[in-house]
Length: 278
Image (cartoon, rainbow, N blue to C red; front, side, top):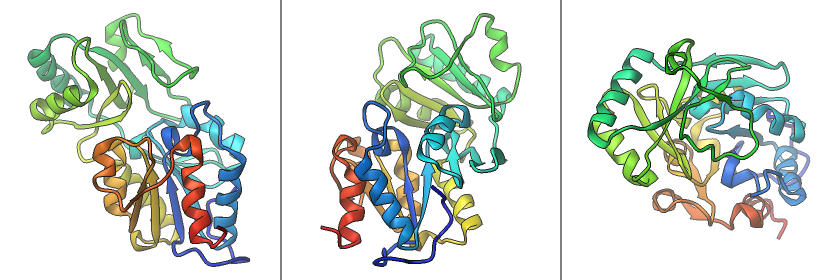
């Protein structure tokens, strides 16, 4: 599967770029993509659109999904920090977190709410995800590296930090982080138990706009699918935002429409309708 716009061989799609989140959106709960959704994306590509994956996962946690899809074009990873060329297996752009600012942000948040459990995503094609004591990994059987010495957290460039709190839920922790350290780092919620600290100003829209420019596609030509608050900037950038039925209420509030859940082929439901296949 290539992300490059194709010559049209079927009914026209009203958009030239289909941007899809992964977890909770393109992927079903078992981390697979259904045959129906694969067929709908192939039909969109045949109709002249490009498919672009835009995920909070870093490249090492995304690569196996891309390979399974036969995906050879661009992918936006790491919450917009990385633009990755799957066919060439190389990073085109990569933004890293200022570790001094991140440390200061952590200190301010912990001064407000107490100790946090931490994880971090290291930069690069093979960047490890370091997991500290007490941090619960939410993304299933993906490779992680236990963090022994806390000093190792800062030993190499990072794309982002993950934070968890033993008493606060995700919405509350994200709100506190924004209030206390939002002038130092970006804060987003990417899924259950996944509150992230990012380079200030970085969002999925950052990486999406860079990738779209490389593809020669504008925001006005883009439809985006997502499920969590970290997809809000992507929806603001795209012409049409589609929230999954399982999406967070904050995303549904800004979506142009709500489709079926990721388990019920919500992406396919919309694309099939737009292609006149239903």
